[in-house]
Length: 202
Image (cartoon, rainbow, N blue to C red; front, side):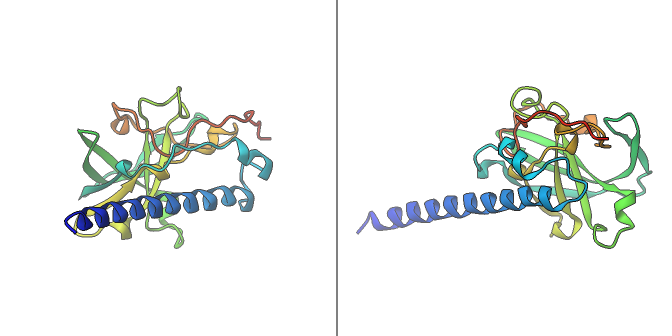
């Protein structure tokens, strides 16, 4: 009988791992379907076979402390096509990952803030040590919502990190992740390099 609690713990942990993996699988299926639904998408259905992801790893799902920033000025975040988009720094987040203390910045888009559908959207662009090796060289993005901040904390799941459209095609205005979100470690989670031929948008 003394082994029963341990056995139940193992079963519980295994169930959590399975359900979390299933959540990520479901999230990625929705992500792929969005390419087909989106009229502005760089990918068609037969391109989706060239999308690749790391296995779901709950190590890369962290609870971050949030510090909302005040009186931040609007600035122009450069894009890979040589133009820029207007953002402001919304908050600083702090968390530990793989033994490292990390600070990142969440941004808010000026253009999207005026759209009721996206007014709560927070943008987390970043680069890390996997870029140009296992992941897109231009970095990856994570979408969050200001509504997800509870008691000055927010969950950040790098398993949901995705590539900008510029990873698949030229002709898009993809923001360049600011230097303050350049992580000095490998984030082996989320989307990997696209293996299809890069497209040319007219």
